Length: 443
Image 1 (cartoon, rainbow, N blue to C red):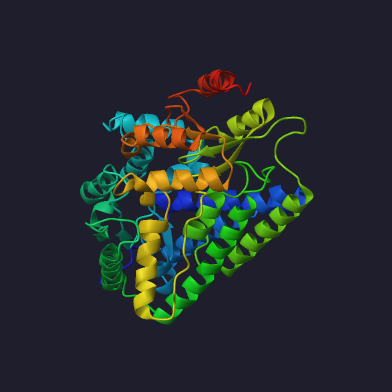
Image 2: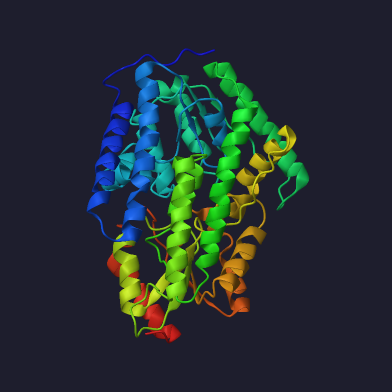
């Protein structure tokens, strides 16, 4: 067993987590000043992020083990083993991370990382190399969904920082991959069992199967309510656009609120609020404008979504009804037996989780999601941002475009960097959309 890291008060990684905790706590304190129930519901997520950061800070200061894990490698294990965890890959997604994104991107290139490497991978390599991530007792890596991902693990193993001494396991996705394939599920389930044994070896904490069942039973409620919410988003007019649900549901269910009963309450409140809007026929688009329903087929643009999406809504009546991370295709996990628990966790990681289920294996994942979302949500335009780092998606570009032709909907690609708004500046993106809407007859 590896001893928990000695407490170092000046550790820059844990200091960053303290600052993020305080930042999100302060944002949460604003809830009482907000009258809009939707805004208030959105701001409530800051409390869950602050709580997740606090758990890591507490473990660090008390000398207890904690781990780095990921959204698709059974994060429920951390709770069931009393191991606070953070997502190894979350640096460019957090509010504080976005505030310094340009600087971090530039410094990652100055380190020698190629500018053609996915920005999310580059920035996380920078954070690890500069000790800006708390050094965990052990780490669970992931070698999917893209080929660039293992570079982060290579840096961890050869880093000049303390990360080189962190025990690391990378559960291997099934070598034979097809949607729902039993052999694939059983293979990955065994990889997750190995992961639990690895964590016990290096932290001393054992897996409590009763606790794991309890955590999964609660998280099942999250996914059931998330599905209810997505069913409501099919309504015309669209009750919500980019600013509500979607990627937020994903982060609550799989990252910051896994198995948390308070998050169950948050999901229920989201469903209740949306039911009221649908019943009243309230939509996002201003009255008098025809609603253009968009499917954003990738991660949301991190740096300028809050400027760009409202512009689309106000200028053209175009609302992002669904996005890749917001789309729900999860099944609840059967907790009646230990065998079914492991299989359920494996299926969720391989076949349910967005970006993973679409990017591993054949292009069927992309095409099936396109068909389901376009038909279920009455989509008019499929938008593919063409993120510079998602080269595995570029390989399916022609297939996605042809699928949209068959469905009778427009397919529009931008070619941008989801994290770096200097790659394709917002003015250029707006100009692309203006010309597209004019050509498509929407303007």
